[in-house]
Image (cartoon, rainbow, N blue to C red; front, side, top):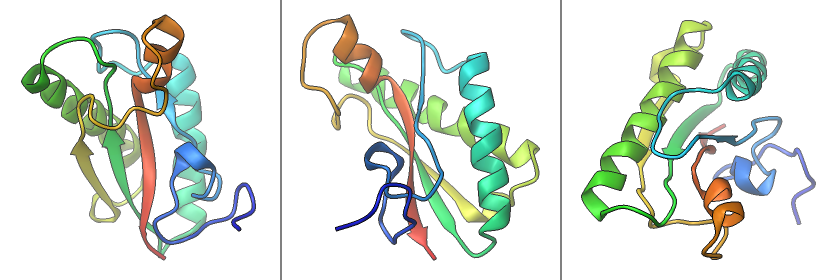
Amino acid sequence: QVQPGELKLNGDSDSNSAGSLQTIYFAFDSASLTQEAKDILKNNAEYLKTQASVKVQIEGHCDERGGVQYNLALSERRAKSIKDFIVALGVKSSRLTTIGYGKERPVDLGHDEAAWAKNRRGNFVVTSL
């Protein structure tokens, strides 16, 4: 059993098993970072700087609305906007990979705005310690 906040291989920010890395959320149909998301990403970047050997995959996700291809492209843009922001804060690009999952990996299976808001996210998966 992983303790909350523990850093483990293949751990992810959605389940609090990626150290201090936190998931961020996006507005509907947007890959733009909100101020809240930027604040979280600043903390994520600082944490990554203290864990110099850690590599992460940044995963972009969408809610269930919209077509498959459209959501795949949007989720890829979301992951890239996260990576670009973190790299600009001084984390080496070589430590970060990105992938877009579209609407294929929801964390909330509901069909309302509350569920959709949780699924429009960018999360972090630890790929190397």
